[in-house]
Length: 499
Image (cartoon, rainbow, N blue to C red; front, side, top):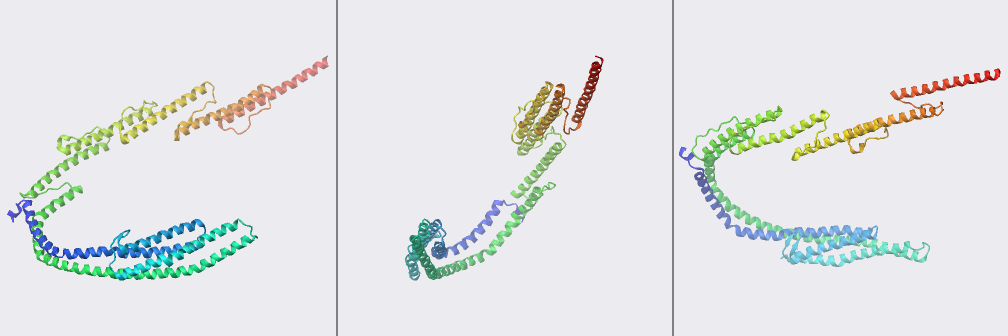
């Protein structure tokens, strides 16, 4: 047994394959003897297979055409009549094409048909084809012409005076059309039933022919199957023996390695592969154990990098010198990933810090890619918004300082909260300007001598205090000037008395 284990896998597999090859040779020889008969039976079955489908297509075309005939009888307008007539022509062509293909052979939508060799089936097909082209088509064409005439008479009648003789004549013609259509409706049902009956006979004969071919194919298959069973019975024990050898000396050790690999794939790296063999499987087990160790070390290195990233230590890097080949490249790639993430994060932190301190930093000149470029674009857009806000507030402050209270911020160039903030500033200026205009108007009229003017309306907060103070001031001025006027009148009266 030990000598067999130390054989190379090539030798083991070669022996097993030779045994299986003898088994296949025996089974194949038995099967080959019946291939000729099977091939002929299959070809015959394939040639008759589309026949049933072709007959079914003929039957379906007649059934659908019967529905079209009802549309021709009851079409509401000429457009619907023309559409139904086109549908009828399509179904009639389908019926004729499949009937011709069954009789003469040819390619169809259900496959390639060979000319039928069944004389009785051919006779029924020819009868159905003649009946369809004769009485059936004549009836449908007459129905179409009557419906077309009815629409023509109706169109002519609408253009006439309902009391005219011509109107009455056309109404009579239309009544005759409807009576004939009513009669033809029953005739169409009888002719349709006759067509369906003929196609049912065609279908029955096609089924009988196909069933006979199927029985012939079944007999041929049974003969081949019996021969193959003999070969399988002879090679069964040999196959069992070969399978046992392969399982015991190749499959079972490989399954052990596979089980370990599956556990490694699930994240379990605390495993050892102990297999004392000198063949290829032993060397695979040894190499797999080394691979597990390398993966274990790589996992620890990646875990350290992840912990550093989680703790915000973006300057931490892995040591690729601990590994070789692709594992070292992977550590370098993780380091590059850390650097790719750290750069934008540091830049974002710097810009946010500067903007939080009231500084508007310059646009970002560094090049980034992917989502990092999106971060750059958003930061650049934020810087632009901050510059715009700073410019708008400076412009408003300068205008207010110069007494230009009509100047407003251009909030249309901003969005969201920034637009709301500038709109709120504009609203504040609107409120201040409106209060000033009202107050200045009252004071201007008072300066012109009109002490009856007052600030009207409800003014909240400080605006209310301004309103009250101005109204009190003008009221007291009005009272004071009234007293002065009374005193002046008294002085003038006293002077007159003295004189």
